Length: 213
Length: 99
Image 1 (cartoon, each protein chain N blue to C red):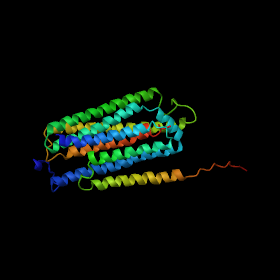
Image 2 (tube, helix red, strand yellow):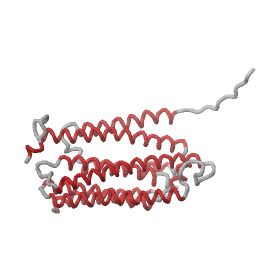
Image 3 (cartoon, rainbow over the protein chains, first blue to last red):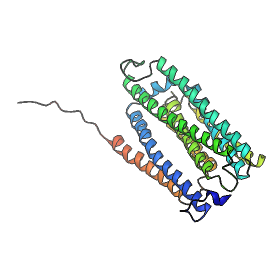
Image 4 (tube, each protein chain N blue to C red):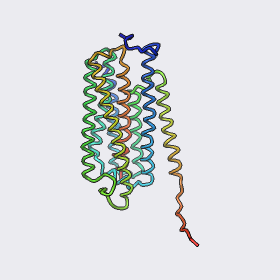
């Protein structure tokens, strides 16, 4: 069973598994710097426009943002439980956990789309028809530029993650994973939790930090 | 089954409590500066996910090194870039007098 998964360039399954995990962590390290530029933009703009950011934060939908945070935390926990099951060779429960994870990911995207719709309805899109006026409107527009760029980028990562989890379900149903070989399940799990981590940082930046009066 | 679910359920509970903490903090009337402190629970949540869901400490090979390198370069990025912007003194531009 294990020999069927071993590619010729590796000396053992452990070597192959370590290389795959290292590859994902290296990819995520550059993702941290990719999102780091975005976090710096928030830091800089908030430093120069604290009142505009404060005003803009009041316009965000805290309820949907909070529900989405719980949804993502839960999805990561469920996937990690699924990973625990494949370590004891329980493929059926792995598939169940992955399906729940993917459904929670879809729920996140649906809620996010609803939130975007409300935001657009309230003219929270920077530009000529921006819904806020007054002295702080410039800073508020910068906040909403950050909001749109950050949430759309995060949603793209979520969509990719849902696709990867669906791929794990497909492969698991064909019996590709076992207690001996399940590295792809681990690699996808690391990616999924990373998307969760990015949201855990975006959540206070978008919905909370500017709220205390 | 409980052996697998229980530890993850505890981590989930800790994450939910930390989220409730930062959410509650957002409703305090403690001024704009206090808002920055709401990032502290978020930082703890990131560590919990990193250690218990992503299991960085158990990933073999270079994974922990890559994770630390990412944090280091993120701090360099945020620190060095912020240093210029936040220590800069702005002077008004003088009106130019043309002969």
